[in-house]
Image 1 (cartoon, rainbow, N blue to C red):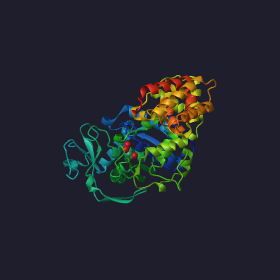
Image 2 (tube, helix red, strand yellow; image 1 turned 90 degrees about the horizontal axis):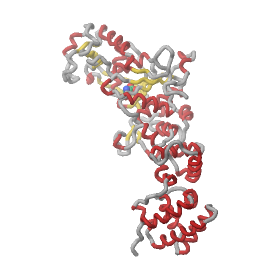
Image 3 (cartoon, rainbow, N blue to C red; image 1 turned 180 degrees about the vertical axis):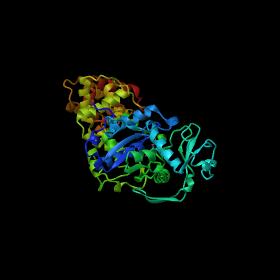
Image 4 (cartoon, helix red, strand yellow; image 1 turned 45 degrees about the horizontal axis):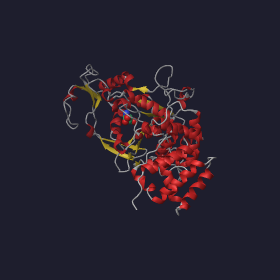
Length: 490
Ligand code: GLU
């Protein structure tokens, strides 16, 4: 099996120099993988693959204080799970591990030295003093002195030339930004680590990145970076700042809105191809109304010109809908596997799963059909298939409280207990005739039996449900429901 670092062999083959598009995903390993970051990675990956270019993974881990070791694992494992393979990696053997900025301090050191020598940056030992950007740093006068750079306690600042930075963003259009507001921003911090803006530029140039696609929260960094490209004599890549992903309340999607990390969705039993499909449509659309895409179809249709400028709203229901479309493409055994995993996570089943349980789950999947839309949904209306008893929530008591329904349940229960050949048509006959004996329509009795057997109001067809729950358990659960739920006062 491939490991997350393997990546494809693509970029090793001769002719690598003919690759035109080179993009990167450059996460900082500060915590979980926010779906917004995943969307950024996805757009880069789709663009690279659609142009037969390279997709590079670079871990921006220079900020040691914010570094979370586990985060690196979450990033590589998450991308791997989604099928977003990356190309290249450091090391002579061409391994495909990601690049780590923490292993590249030499090149930052080299470039900052060049800037200092050219009088475009200067060491600063007053960095720790709180200073507003619009107050000139007293160390400015020391420009040209180079001996004391890259020492602990001494930062390096960029000598901001002022003026305006103008650039054409592929998504946002033409932008003019006043440079003064950034002051003489820091390139190397007093702990000798490079700042994001500096390391990002040095690496994007070193890795020959042609297009930078990232969240539009980075827009204010772009003028700083463009000033650095200019100062270093590097030609800048193109920029495409992607619109934000908002929650339904219009605020930036964050933890307080519920699941926002990739792992949350994986652990809820969503399919990677459905997440890829859904996230691709968050800010991009194909021509026409179509919404179902396989990853291959997305690659062939993706284009930067169809990335929207306006923010998109995360819509969980749409994700669930797309997930169900992707589930329909799966063989029953794979659908059953998703449901079994959900039940194991919830502690209702335990590995190893027996063949009988697998077969039984297959039958449940057949019965549920398109009602089963993602893994954890089985907990809503399918966990009871694997437990002895069900508990009926008080809010569902009304289904079972009327005297006629209770009498009909009693009659049905007695008849069900006598069935010799347990099959759906016999079950149906019993339910319908029990209802008519008490002048009831079939529907209230069907709903009541469903609640009694499953504790839920949705699920497969009632007669299939009764068959799958089995004779003994059905008879017992009907009795238990009558015992648990009080009869309504007449
Ligand atoms: N490390 C930055 C982040 O995680 C990268 C931004 C960029 O792509 O330039 O937001």
